[in-house]
Image (cartoon, rainbow, N blue to C red):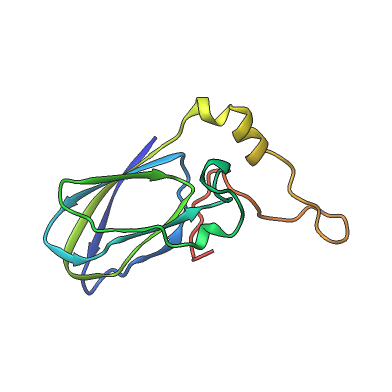
Length: 143
């Protein structure tokens, strides 16, 4: 687990580009101050939706929800849910972020099959760099 506080202040901090978190589940608690803007935009799941939600690729860039932070309230989302913080317009906001990992989940057949398989071969027979998820990286920059 990892916990940290994020501060957003009008005139100093802009939003945070779309990214995924280096965890299985994220808890984001708005600690407050007075502010406007700085919502949380949530898109689809990195690596595609599970079959129970329609499956298929390309949905990770689809807008799902825009969450308006309220002091004393929290939002819980999957670490592989693409999300980003919108620009703060006025005031100052603090959020407590808790990244949680599940050893049980990470040892499951589904997780191992998805994240521990060999990357696809690139043209010319060499393994492609980068690629699919997990591995403890924070993926930022709208990708």
